[in-house]
Length: 270
Image (cartoon, rainbow, N blue to C red; front, side):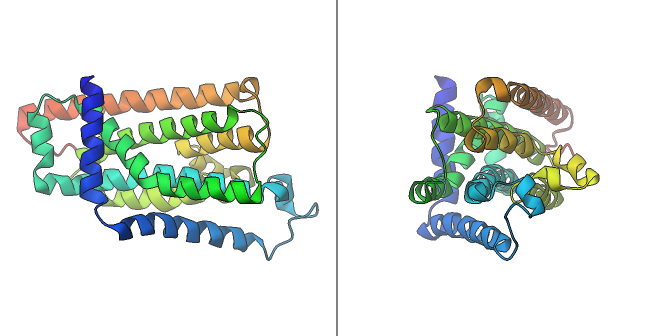
């Protein structure tokens, strides 16, 4: 119950601090929609029939669904990158000192912050995706559990990713360069707009760094290829192992930083 209470408190704190203006909600919708529309029409000048090289990787009938799932996953993960980047500003306001003087579990704090950032930052674009699929009939609900399972996979993956980033950004002197590295490269190499199979070998190696790559692969198999649980079991097991390692690293970073602060009185670890 204490964890749930703190999670609710973190949700309210994030909402009051970061989403206090209607224009913020407008930007949460208009920017992803413009990005999606730009990506969609960038495919239009090129043939997407059987003679197209991309037809071997993207079914032209599923192009809208392919891009919608890609950008939805990107928005989920990007919200967590931005939330972790804003962590440095909280150091100046004294919030972090209050947190470390309180009996709140530090790991619960970073995952509570990640969960709240995901909910606040992605729900509007998720609504746009659902409305778009409803009107264009871009998804075949052959199994009632496919869409909820895809949402759970994306949510859990993004929250774990955000927990790791929050742990790193929390104890970094200046993590702005990480924001640059983790933003645009994630959009390019994670398969948001183009399948990683179309990349050269060196780009495929980079795509393996981002958990979004694995999550999108599973989600698209569920929604576009009508994969069953048995079909996605290997990919799901691989993603679970990656997320488990990320949780372990996050926990180690938090504990390491606490030991460092007790010895030196300095919150900066990196």
